[in-house]
Length: 106
Image (tube, rainbow, N blue to C red):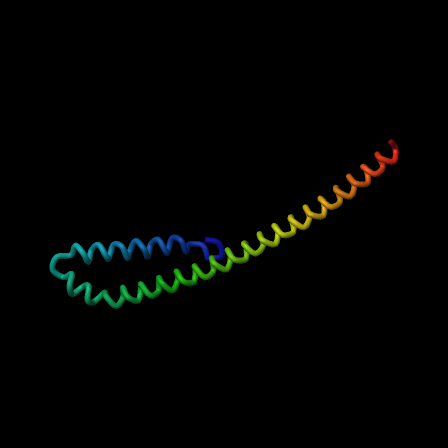
């Protein structure tokens, strides 16, 4: 990811892998699963809130970048239309001038 310190992808993958591993062990643990789930439940809830917060922040940043790029693209399209209109007008004037000159010659 751009703008984030190096190693963030690794840490995020590690945390996600650990969370998945804990989840699998909770589901498959025979006897202590109920006690373990109740002990780890608050940690999981906090982790979920943290992940949700990060997702919201990333979504917000991505949305801002996309909106800025869309605005730049719209400006470029409008500038291209204006330039094309100017060229069209100039070419039409040159054509009309050439046509007048051709009529004067004949």
